[in-house]
Image 1 (spheres, rainbow, N blue to C red):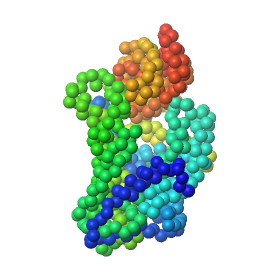
Image 2: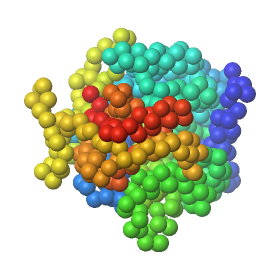
Image 3: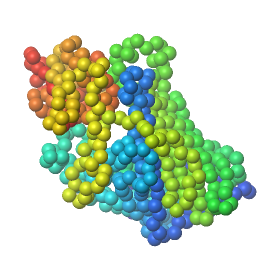
Length: 492
């Protein structure tokens, strides 16, 4: 089934395969990956992301945000031939039993439930190479068709706006359907990292380094990988491996400059006060990955995996944690505290379940994090909703100027809006009060943008992009009318 269509992904898989070093003679033999066919395996999966933006602002709950999820996914190797395997993953957003902390602190489960609804599937059948790396996917046309129907008949029967980004996601999936696997079952790739189609011999404590190139927005970034056999357990018949990866700092920094420029422009006032050393630090970026893998000495399959990926860019740090454990085997790897903490500072998200005619209601459909009321230090106006809770009221903003121009970073056209000083202050307070929540921007009662507010907007400048230039010119003309205003509000 592999065709020219998959060439770009095949090259990526080749890099992963070649990242297994040629082990030295003697030592411990780790068998080739040879899982039993027709046997369903269940995996417990814990995930978390930590975002630190304290360099840019100190507002509690905004400078650092953490999200996590807990899942129980099932995998069956359906068949194997001389070329690869056919694998089925059964997916669920339900919380497993015995998780730590409150159920509504696992916001990733809510988002994942919506992902399954949007993709219209709770199972994926994929072809892999002999290491277990995904290389093909069945049912892509049906999934994309379902997503187009969801977009056309959005929540409440309102079609998704062209600038919402939904259609961009669909186009990317059509260009590379394996992104569906990355979105719904990234565990498949992580488990494959520890597996080799042929037996490998390693010595405990001996490190072996290899290198490869990864593409980031057209920039080739060298990545160095170091493998080490940490230990073996004769009783459990397992070996513990470690993998450390580091991206070349100069090349990775180069690849991140467009994103860094956008971030700096979002904090223009603060950026003006940065020292030369601080600005140079902001323009640097780094990426590292640390993985521990417990591999079976019986069939070469990965029984447990723990991964931490850290990306620093533009004065911010994003760290992701993943832990996978096959349920029929005892856990042996230490867990990061964020995955097991009973108390966790989570972003203020109100996640509404997507409507579905094929998926029945579950307990998670009733869970969401209620909006937090504004603190006394915030000037944002509040109004009582119908249910008695407080919600941040819409804010009308008066426009000083509106011009369409070409971005020197992305080379796309954008509508650059500057608010009058009084409205800039209102908008600053509004954005501070709705951090971590989805908002809407309306021009002449039409929704033109629905951004998630990830950072406060301090300088009264708004950039509207992702829309046809002609449409942007039309909006600019509307905003140049004396007294023209923009309405911003929480997404209903």
